[in-house]
Length: 283
Ligand code: OGA
Ligand code: MN
Image (cartoon, rainbow, N blue to C red):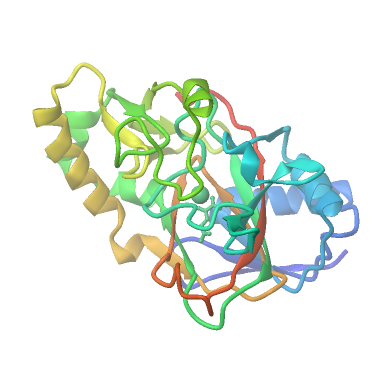
């Protein structure tokens, strides 16, 4: 297949033009797509028309799939698909309407955080609901020296929701049993990408609650400085969704954030399917 890889003007992201993800991808094309994902952190495929099975099949090319702890938000019959949606049935959200209120990396609060996530847009609002992405290699490489020194070699503690330090932020909520499945874990503040071998910032303001072996009075100002550094516009790309977009990001070296400013507005309708590729233990 002939297809083009067009990098965005931002410091991350590229569009892949000329691939129909509903068709099986030959091995050499897959290798180019895989390379583009490593090089650009986020790849965007537009104008796709995918069944859940086709999305799952493409996602599996990158590794086994993981499941979100909120299993009540998964697609009926397809537990590998997390529904990210403002739709309600019988007055209840059918999926997560508010995934990602702060900069984060998916499943960074489990032992083996996600390699990547693929979010496929079925319905998008005319405005609002963009998703921001940030390049954590660049954030790492530009860290002020004293901040890097203070956090180098340290491990951070991760939980599903930072806000409640033990609870989750999501509207759909985590049950006590689901929380038990995700006890606090520690990962390096700065991790090495297992494929590119580059270092990046991994701690994030949605899931990181502290630093191992450090009092909160010491860790909190350091984390706040780190989070501010990482969120600078120069490290980011903002995706404006169209129906049929499939965006695949690398959770090992990029953060992302949802724009939830229109949540609660009845005219705001957004419906997406996410698959999540399992990653390995960060080092
Ligand atoms: C996610 C997520 C952001 C968005 O699905 O993991 O963070 O804009 N989504 O919906
Ligand atoms: Mn997310």
